Amino acid sequence: MTPRVSVVIPTHGRPPLLLRALESVRRQTMSDWEAIVVVDGPDVATERALAAIDDGRIRYHVNERRLGGGETRNVGARLATGRWVALLDDDDEWMPQKLDRQLETVEAHEAPAVGFTAIIVRTPHGDYRWPRRAPRPNEHVSDYLFARRGLFAGEGAMHTSSLMVERSLFAAIEFDPALRRFQDTDWVLRLVAAGGRLAYTPEVLSVRYMEEGRRGIRSDHGAAWTVTYDWITQRRHLVTPRAYAAFLLIRGGETTAAARDMGAARRFVRESFRAGKPGLVPLAIFAGKWLVGPGARRWLRSRLRRFVGRGGTRA
Image (cartoon, rainbow, N blue to C red):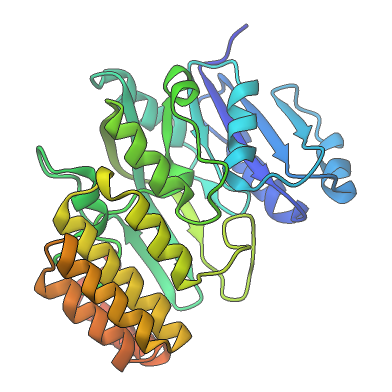
């Protein structure tokens, strides 16, 4: 019998985290699903852990060689049989009602739907609710994701582990296998450009773990400013001028400040004015990334939390 939802989980070298993610799938209130775990390259420990699971709804595939997160998700989607494909990263987990609630949204939405939900971002310094708002009517997806009106991240956000799309749409618009950063953002921009319509479920249905010092399938290739610059300039046709400038200033400020490369910083600023429409908030964030260190920003966030409540913020 064909399941309603195919859950695709890419993984490599983290059996305990993978088993936690799978357990959150098995706890779903909606049982009509299959889970496809794609192991990104030979991995004896992970394969042994998967072979020990006694649940016919869970199957796995091992890539012959490392392909990266984007192509590994593509492999899983190609093996899927359900109408809907839901993505889950191996170091995240779902609330028990995630599939039930999200299906209510996407199945009632004008097709083709690009479903996403609110999430909890769990860090060593506190929990944060992302996104803090829904997309506005007729708001371009790039403005929603990049053109912040406040100083802290999470105003508009779509995390991989909250995404759900129809399998037919996934087959038409796959992840770019060449990318090692911005994979999910790139995919969403191209889905919307191809006619996908955002379908937001405001209930918190996923937990994203952001633990300092942990590397994984999403972060193996670092945060070099050249990768950031190359990606956004190559995707300028998918974003508005306002979003283009905001991304250059906010992400560029982060990566160039981390590298302490003032020449690169000037390059980001020049490009934001040359081909974009910079706003005051992104300019302020850019300056803040250079003038205020990560430790001081964490201290500031902890003080602001008492005023903004459990919704939280993250710079």
